Image (cartoon, rainbow, N blue to C red):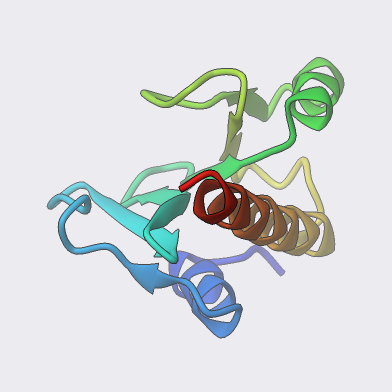
Length: 116
């Protein structure tokens, strides 16, 4: 079963991320945790485009392994990936990457607090 935009939004929200209304546009949902961006969903895209915060080493590996994983679109290419939801990646793998993005964002938020 292919994940829908609603499925992905629900999973992101279940982790505690919220739509950042200040950064979201009529074309994108931007999700944040403690003020740090975690994910961007391009609304009504075909295929669905999901950009996620990602560990730089993992991002490089994923981009080399999967043609549906690209550099973050309009984001820091080192720390973000964009997943084209073409079916190349299993639903579970996408869920795992969403959880990874959440964990990376929490880590970043903690680092920013400790450096304040």
